[in-house]
Length: 313
Length: 287
Image (cartoon, rainbow over all chains, first blue to last red; front, side, top):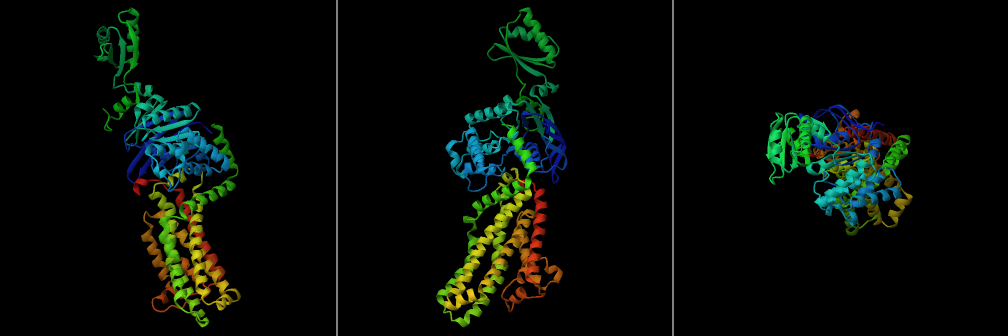
């Protein structure tokens, strides 16, 4: 059994409507975030992986298993969908337990795993209440509990942070990180880029059904050559640093920070930029306190490649 | 933590039949728990027990001299053939079986089953089993109630008819007819609910087909649930007027052939349903 989720030239058409087109991916363990505007094809990719929809062309394998191998696939995969609907009349506890019982395990084991999962998502006594009376955040949690209850190796999460308050978001993100550390594949689609950005090992950018970029966030950012990278440098003499750096031709913009203790610089050649900066620091002209990329995150990449309205800026 | 599912997957691959059976039992239990006693099914309970209510009124309001037993026996046969088979079980099964897959798609909860480690064929057959148990329990109870209420008014003569005469045999035949009707219509409506967003128009076509079936050529008669059941009726119903169309006997067929024929038809429909569910896609936005 290999350890990757593989899409080979996968397309999906809903009649004449494009879902995704010619997607090829090879996703290793860790946290991978699917980023794209509404209708870009994120959910289609997740549904294709799990067999809820079939590809019009191409092949998909999840750790060596085809989506049609339901028995084996769903023993190792948990999918927390964004469909906010549940089978009628169930309590949270019954919902998780019923799911586990379908794995064919003994009832005692299923009860034990259901208990663990509900504790993990911190749903507490609410698990004994009917799901129909849950808040949106609680419904999100019980879906997550059901997806992780059987200890899957692959966890697919479609907008898992929707409806959660900041505390619950932080707890969920911590849980995703923990699962990732245990060697799981965690595939997340989310609009809340600021929060998933910090934990993602890699991002997949998709828009209009087409794959725009994939890889480590920093690698993807560096590949966006037409957008000079922005760096914030905290130092004692920002105006001197700005004048020095602006003299080199690949530095295209310099802007003082509002507090006067730093400068934003944009450069078309980040490697040469850092080399120059080291030289200036070594000469002692400026005392540099901190250097940090200012647009090296999922938000910035999203805006450059996809744009706020779905078209690249 | 991550070794457990791998071991489980290997275990599953080695002994699928035992697992499928266990999953089918558990799915059936879940379905029965959710669907057997539900306020939404009230109209189906009414469909099943309306004749029992009418027979009960007849029991209270009318006298029951023993010479009327033959007439009441014919009336009961008519209720089974003309009401239950043509209307009660037909529409009851439409309500029960079309909810199993299509109802879950409308409620947007079917994906939970499709995302569990259960073969879709097992899921379909388990849902069919649950629907069949519900329908047979409901309509079987109704037939037993009809039968008991129909003969209890005759006192000792009624008891003799049931226990020392043809009564019990007739009851068994009615129950067999009800079981086969539930399975037959259930299989058809389960399939229709996967083929159409609204299976009701298609069900009306089936009802039309079933109605004109007795006057069709014998080959076409074989594609009908009611035509097989007619041959199993323990009491021949002689209809007049419009009812003649519903009760016409065109070709005598032994009971075992009718039973086997209907079971064969059910198996074929379920087989095609299994094929359909393999390729079923979850696209709730189109529901």
